[in-house]
Structure formats: structure tokens, C-alpha cells
Length: 361
Ligand SMILES: *Cc1c(COP(=O)(O)O)cnc(C)c1O
Image 1 (tube, rainbow, N blue to C red):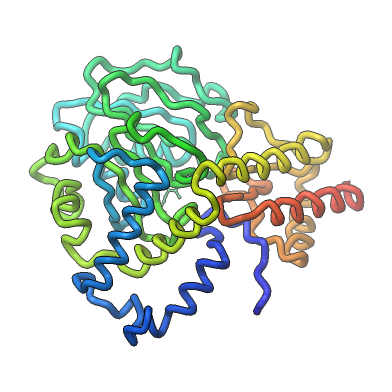
Image 2 (image 1 turned 60 degrees about the horizontal axis):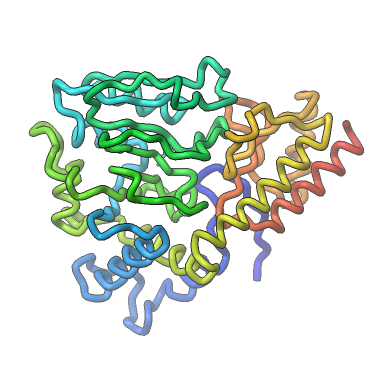
């Protein structure tokens, strides 16, 4: 078998090797039918079974209650930034947004194109190193929804709590931490996640929406962006991203084999503990995020001397530790350690960090 590097890419991110091998084995001839999943009609019995199994496995993994629809949509998470207000924000209404970094800011900017957006809290006052506690939030009285991003993929800032918003629908961008730890879906009105971090190939976006929120779309909402249309058509109003959906289904099966979300949570905790311990135990590496708000999935870190960044990245690449360069807006390094990136990868990274510090620090 060809060698697989340790891939720390923020997205599109590593996929489990076992999943890719299965896709490879099924590529030309899916289960003896003599064709690839990519070549199947989305209306065929075979494909509908694949799609339904993926949905059921995701429901099992997250414990999705029966009064929620699971939608397999397109356009990535960014399209949801428009889709959410078009579906849930009345023209004369107001929506509350929590700003904790670049992704939630993008959602705010797009939301403003469609109506009144109240930024109820911002991490700006903490230089995006901490999340404002709910006692600091200025929520509106009759907000159509409250939107936040549970994990800021670029800044490495993650909620370790779920906001309390009474009867207001809670809308969450879980693109980079869905399926990484256990959640109570019933706390949310809408959960959405671009697939390419913790689910599958890019382009696909999964939305889990409480049924009472369907049917509220504005008349100007494009048919393709209307949640109710998607729900009424089993996410097949048009041709869905069939192969991405299938591959995501393979990831869900793999997750179940691994012991489900609870097992992933334990593994992810061990991974992030090891990496933050290495950072905190050194004067050469640093991460500025308040400990309770540190992301389990995306760990940005800096070298004491940024002139060494290039050498660090070159040495990493030579050892098969790929995609550690931080986002261009932040600089430094970032290790994304989603479900498919194992403890062995983090161990290899930590060993390299110690070696580099000894030689160059
Ligand atoms: C990656 C990401 C997005 C954007 O996803 P696209 O599929 O590229 O649109 C949005 N929000 C978060 C939290 C992300 O990590």
C-alpha cells in the first residue's frame, strides 16, 4: 500500500484510510451491480438505500430526535449564511448573532444583507482569545433565532457549553466540530456543517432542522435554498451530491465501528490534551486561547521566533506531517486534528516539535 502522510489540514481534511479503501474497492463495481456509485441514478433503489442508510447512521450517531429533518444540501457551509436568514428571518424581524471569529463574522455579514442583525456578543474585546460569557450577551427580546459557531476553525476558539436561549431557536455552525463530541440535538433549532472537516468531501453540507422551523421561508427565497422544499423531497429536489453523500455514509459507518461519538470524544480529548501539553510545557511554542475555550479540533500555535516558521514547516513535511501552516490571517502554525487524524499523528507531531525546539529553539 502507498504511504499515507499525517494530514493536519483544516479542510478539506483527512478522511479515514479505511473509508478511502472501501470507496476504492467499490469504485468500479458497487456490490456486484457493475457500476460506480457516481454513475447511479439518484432515484434508483440502490442509491436511495445508500442515502437512507447514511441518514439513519447519522441519526444514530447524534441521537437525532424524530421531530428533526436531516438534510444533505449543497453549497457548503457558506451558503447557509444566506440560507438561514432567507428561511428563518422575517423581513421585519431581528436575528441575534454571536461573533467569535472569522466564520461567525462571515455569517453576520451575509445575514445583514437580508435583515436586522444584532451582534449580541463579540469576542473582539478579548482579542478572540476567550468567549464572552452569557451574562455579557445582549440578546434581543423577540429574535427569530440566535446564531453562533461552536468552533472557530481559524482562531481555534471553541464553545465548551451550549447557550441558553429559552424558546428562541438556536442555530449553530458546527462545520468543524460536528461528531467530535457528544451533543444534545434537542437544544438546537438548526445544526449545520460543511462536510469537509469531520464528515466527508467538500461541497456537501448537512443540516439538522427542527420540523417546526420548516415552511417559514420568505417568498423571495430561491426554491433550491428552501429547507421545506429540501425536506419534502428527501434532499433530492434536484440531483444531490450523490458521491459525497455516499462517502459521508461510509464515514458514518466507520464512526459507528469506532464506538460512535462518545468514543471519538475520548480520543479527541486525549489528542488535544497531548498537543496542548506539549505547547504549554515549552517556552518555544505558544497558544494564547483561554484554556476553557481552546479548540479540540484546530490548534493554532506560534514559534517563539517566526523566522523559524519556514524551517519548521519544511522539517515537518520531510517527516510526512502535512498542512501545518496557519491560516494566512493568523500566521504561525495550526494543527487540525479532526476525527480521522489519530493519536499516532499527534504523537508524531509532538515528537517533531520537541526535536525541532531542541535543535533550533
Ligand atoms: C470551513 C468552515 C465554513 C465554510 O465552509 P464552506 O464549505 O467552505 O463554505 C464555515 N464555518 C466553519 C466553522 C468552517 O469551519
